[in-house]
Length: 220
Ligand code: ZN
Image (cartoon, protein in one colour):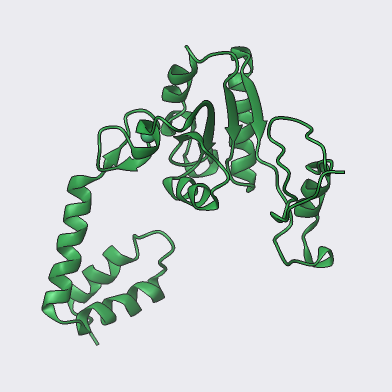
């Protein structure tokens, strides 16, 4: 059987989306075909409007429909902290946690030389420019992922930013809430051990009175 050309094209376009393999693309294509024309028009218009309205924040490269994103423009944010993340989605996740009130810098990827992602493909140069005149008490929190590429990116940034004499830190890793130790992989468990902090006394500016699982720990 010859597959209609329009269907082939649709599957091909859908399979270009991240995380969508040929099978999922085929499933999506048939799903879309079955939807009423108005729904398809609405989807297409929403995509076009988003593409037209959204761009990157001039300062932190977060996705925004303003010139400078809401985080950067908020006078209540702590300007002495800049958290470096891979993707805008990571920023949203951190915002949702409610644990951070500083600024961000979005790299839009992570170093991955095997797949052609070198340092000049990421927003690293603008980060350097941004930090050039940063006060000495500025803390740069490297919050790239814990994948091999995320770790390599963090290490690269650590070396690159070291001469600026700012306070560099890496996010702590812990065990998932509700998870038993025996099921954690050794890297997570090792990180949870090395990233441990004293209970009931503040060790450094990053420590809070909360335990890793967000449980209140009474002072001793
Ligand atoms: Zn911004």
